Amino acid sequence: MGQASTDIEVLAAKNGRWYKNRSGAWVPSVTSLTGLYPKGEGFDRWLGQADSYRDAIEQRDKAAKSGEKIHAACAEHVDKGVVETVGWEEAEVKKLLGFKRWLKDKGAHIVGAEVPFAADLYGGRIDFIVEVGGPDGNMYGVVDVKTGTNVYKSHTIQVVAYAEGIHSIPELAHMPVSFAIVLHLKSTTNKGYQEHITHCSNLDWTNTIQYDVLVGLLRIHRYEYGTEPIMREDKEVPTKVCLS
Image 1: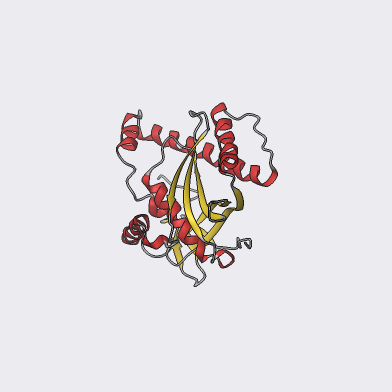
Image 2: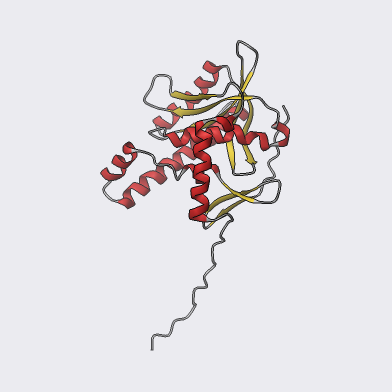
């Protein structure tokens, strides 16, 4: 399989992250769409148990920063085979080791890492495209790594969107993607990971319930945020204020 191109224009706008597709149109990111899907009672309880909304946001941002570090380390492990973990928390190291063990257990060969795309309706960045052996020959799939406490239905919708979106990449357009995995790296299990797999034997991801929900989320996103990026206004701050 050919290596995917990375020259896709991405814009962080006032109304979310947008990707420019091959026709020149701006399309929202997959995570902007899946972020509109409710996370459920468990998340609501976590939010309600926080001392304050600000405290909850700080916890979320801390977890996100840790997740970004682990994501980068997973990609570095694939690229170099060795990752420097001095100063890491024990839980973070266990999650990285969980990724290493998953690769071995799965017998997965990484075809691509951090692969961007911009389809007709949405864009995104795929953590990993993998190839694994099967009874009928090699199979291809997409993998999104999660490092938080929980995995939500929105994450499954996300990887299904990636499985379909990969066909917008010219070099990978004919790749037969038959599975999509949410790989949950966990420091509380012996293996260090748990995988949530969605299969699509006929390779038509648009004919899945997750894709139907994604289209519904796209309609909500258009209603709430419009169809194009809204640029942030650079407000001028006065350099002198007269109080008299």
